[in-house]
Image (cartoon, rainbow, N blue to C red; front, side, top):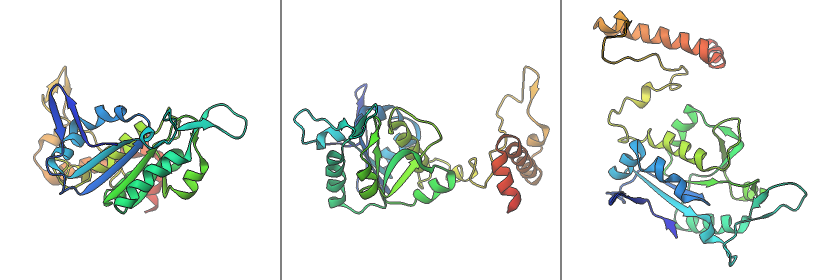
Length: 252
């Protein structure tokens, strides 16, 4: 049985109030569905679900195992440490989902997948239905990658205990781009990396704190001067903090 997206916490049920109007559906296959309760029951993702613009379902992989002990992993054929996720439960789950609807991508969160970037998130935010498979243990049977997966995504050049955290990161990066997810529709457009630059510094009240002052230009009320300052700060920060992005920017 899938974990249909609602969580009960402190006698409050967070659920999708308009389940037939969602813009994107995300099915996540995992051995540990409870790991998603925190990321998906707070902030932007929670509000997007409540608005009915995204439908997220968690599928416990053990429910698709034919083993009497609900095992989903086994020893590798070759020598080496670590268990490997079996193909049959994964195939059973993906086949069931694909029998119900068409999917734009079947994604595997993998350290050696395509690096998640803002342009990639922008592109994927236009999808209607995606499946995300979370790996665990030493990895998954290679035949899953060869025959069932259509896209592999990495959130960085490091290894985690499983794909659940990566799947939560990917989901958040997509949901916040869906129209209606943010209260300010233009907010996502000014995020870091949207224009190949990191974001400029931002300030709020008080104007002076412990002698630390907000730049006077931001108090000028002159939008043209303020925008020029923000652009110059973004370029300077990109050059200093993300030189590889700055080099790409110079070539454009």
